[in-house]
Length: 178
Image 1: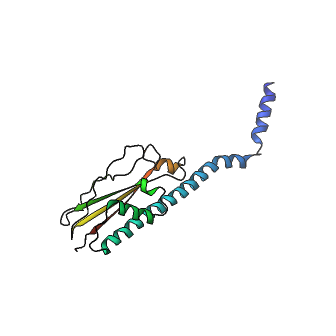
Image 2: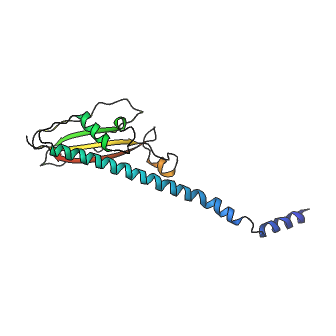
Image 3: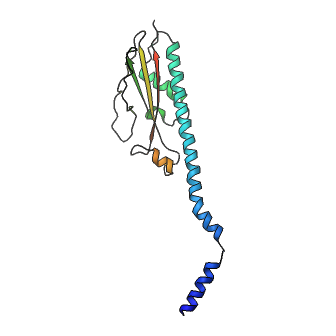
């Protein structure tokens, strides 16, 4: 009986049927994970580029609009109109405008204020319209939902309980004189 089992085992070990299937089963998950991470990274870059572009265009309007004093909600609405690919932008975007001394180092908090739907709503941290010839730093932070939250990159990106990740755009400008 044992000889029969050993003979069948040896015969089974010599067969090469199904070797391509084994290789496919081993390699397929890695290839799919790589593809999903590539798509996720592409969307991260797209969202960040759109946020940067929207902030830059809005600050350009501030620079050219001599004498205008835009309010927080106006700036947020303008940025959200221009950041086309950011879903639910008005709820997921937070702005900070900080007055700086142009002759000293820029001192803004390292951690940006970002919206987080798992936290209570916070008032605007700092948003002060500058006077003539003052250096202002505008920082926008948006929380984005990953396209594939269970993929390797999507899971690594999420930094809060809602599975979102933060993208920031920072720019500086000088408030023009009247």
